[in-house]
Length: 286
Figure (cartoon, rainbow, N blue to C red):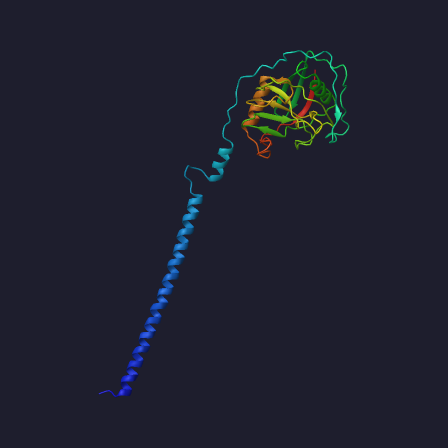
């Protein structure tokens, strides 16, 4: 029979074997746990990647985004007749062209003659641009001081080489031009008052002056910038209408509008630089 010493040795060896087996089982459990964690991370990461890159509608996400931003816009086709003043202006009129705080965007630009300005009749102007010819009719009975300024700037070559820096395609559908700096803040070095009336509204085909509201003294801030309304324009009567654009020219502007813009003027004042560039080559007055 085994002695007490032998029995203690056997028990000791048995305990050691049990401890070894327990350690091995614990090690296997740790390895299994790590392996399952790795698998779970891979599965989750793969799911996230799939959710963020899966194509649910055909085509990649960049193409879908481009398609959304370039979605077709609705443009009215009816050209609105120019408004008429209920009471005709005196003829002739005197205008006031005040020096503006900002210097002229083109050096050497001069303010026009300010006295004895006709408020009757029309003048024709042609803008030769990279997109084609834009034929304008300038109406002195609506805004004689504005027409006088536009004609003067055109004859000085102020608009030659100038682009249209902003277009709106939603809400206010217009193309804004006439700033040689291309920033929306450039002008001819002078300013003049609005020529508006309370019942004035806007529509497709109108030429109107852009402005920066009234200045600190309550005077107008019109300069060289104007806009062409090619569609909807629910505006307050704060912008002097001084003429119209012909239908063929409007179709050229429609194409520019459908090409969209870069959103650089969003959210205020809205719109952005046209994706399809519009640049004047020459502006001449008949």
